[in-house]
Length: 304
Ligand SMILES: Nc1ncnc2c1ncn2[C@@H]1O[C@H](COP(=O)(O)OP(=O)(O)OP(=O)(O)O)[C@@H](O)[C@H]1O
Ligand SMILES: O=C(O)[C@@H](CO)OP(=O)(O)O
Image (cartoon, rainbow, N blue to C red; front, side, top):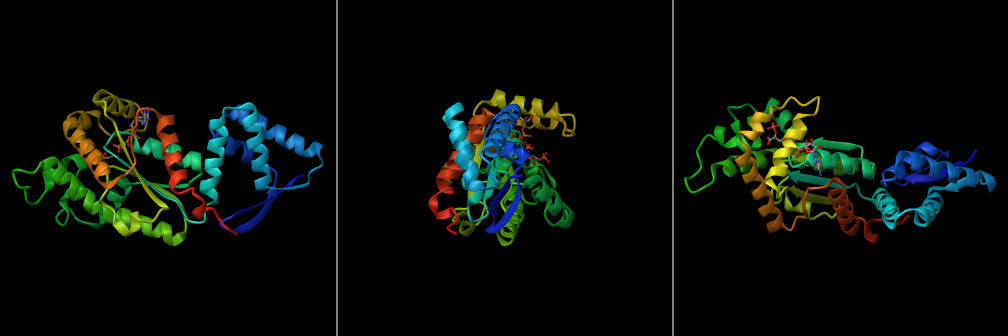
């Protein structure tokens, strides 16, 4: 039996060498499950042949990187190392992924959570749903509508020179942002990494003293191609569990595109990393590389 020594959140642990655990971290680096399991089996076999009975996670990582560099593209070992940088950091990582309805924030959040092994993920739609139960429609009518339809329930119509769709959208975002900040503060207090995604993650709406922390990183997803954006709604409505009617989004597509343009403007104004969410791998690589540049720097890697 091979004993593995490692540490998580500065707590030392020992466990038996597991091909399954090693395979999962290789799959996160975009290796196919079969190849990941084959690599894990070869590494275990090699350790046994050398009579190794105890090894550290860092030593395993060195063996993995050497093998990946010998047999795979450089990008695979880079992904593997990026993932370890983020996991070894001493501060919890709070990733905020915003974008207009249908752009792909939920899907990208799921991909990133898999790639980085971040287990906690919440959507701003869920936060809004909780707020709807607590805050009555009389008190805050704007949160009881979709973001792109919030204008319909504004108590006072905006001045004629204002865009009414964006006036309602901003009202709802400002209100739901209070809930988003509460989740961020709780994650910081508990010391857990989390991904928060949704239309209410808008640059400029989260308190500056939170956004100035370099373990809180926001991304804005956009879709410059309107047809591709429309197709995203068709694709989502094809999901078997989907109960959101396609007509609602197609019938308000122009309003949704206005929120997309507004999100882009806010991202440019606030210097928020923005990506055209055309392709899953490109988007995920962009987010991971940006995180590694900002968050993965030496100042975050655990010293002890
Ligand atoms: N990069 C991508 N490439 C191809 N398809 C994508 C991509 N991102 C998302 N999709 C698909 O687009 C559809 C909408 O994605 P998703 O549900 O994540 O959007 P959303 O932004 O969360 O929407 P909403 O905020 O309204 O829930 C889904 O069917 C998803 O599979
Ligand atoms: O408010 C919105 O824009 C969307 C975002 O997902 O939510 P709903 O499905 O309630 O319209």
